Length: 437
Image (cartoon, rainbow, N blue to C red; front, top):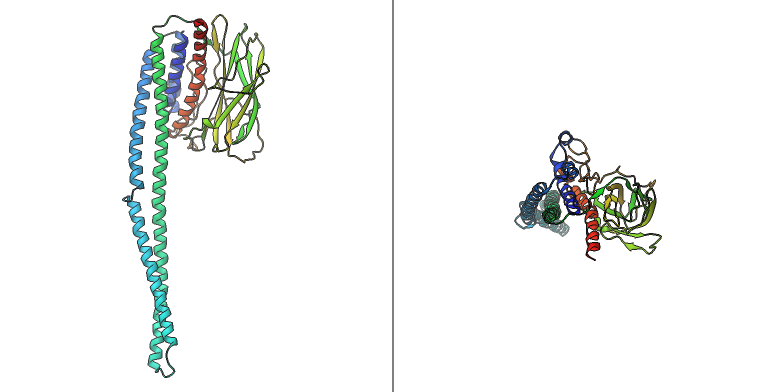
């Protein structure tokens, strides 16, 4: 199978699988093959995938159009909520005026009481009993009026506070809702671009000459050790990446692949940019930045042998608490232009806020943890399905399914899968660069 078509199928699976998972129940998901499974079957049979890619592009376009419409509607709601004419804002202003009037009435009552007391004190010694009684009654009546004004003011103040809080809550809710749909639009745009590119690459491949088959085989094993299950924002963590050649031949050039994906605790906001990864090897000891998912190069690697890459992870101190996955994979390119790689393994971890002091931190385990979504329990149970084509280096359980609120996490993890899917295109580009020189 041609290398670029392998990547195209991988990207299509990464784009479509989250939507498929969120639109069916676990029972139906078990009964029907996922988009990734169908892509894998097609890849194994060597069948063209243009039609599948066209459907994926159509779905991605529709999802993007829907996201744009939702963002426009949410923007309109936000503008209304922030306007002076919003019903809750109008009610808050009215309640505020009532509170101000009640405060004025209280001030007037206090002044009336003060004046009554002054008049009583100013009575001459020659005042008649009737005059004294009248002055005393004026003080009593003024004191009663003060108590009544105090009660009215307290009631008006409480009403105004409640109205203000309701208006503020409505504004905050509208802002949050708009933020969610903005993120959804952004992720839908990325998915659409990925699907369009996959289709374009596949169509272009139709006119290209044959290329060596690139077989992604499980005999290439990649693991990491020393990556903690709890990582504190602002910290620096060193860990090891080991790749083992389980094939029966020497691999001329092996490329380790690592990608970090995470969301905050809401499950909506992707924070991949907070992670900065560097690599170092014995042959190349100076620390170098990981570009995309490329963590250097190893080779040649004899059959049965292994090699290690040192990795250093730095997390921005301002990164919010959340959950994440480290995707780990590898690919190889031989001098005879044969190539291959392995499916990605995920290592789940918890991201803690800066300054946290975690207890009982163990190494992250492969394939046992997935990012949280806003729901504590997805509807219809929990199910995980790998995003892979059978030919890409991008797989892994991305998130629990069954709840629409898991969609942002899916979109981000699909992006991570696509990033690791670059394994195939890197191999293809290297081959082309070598043949062109």
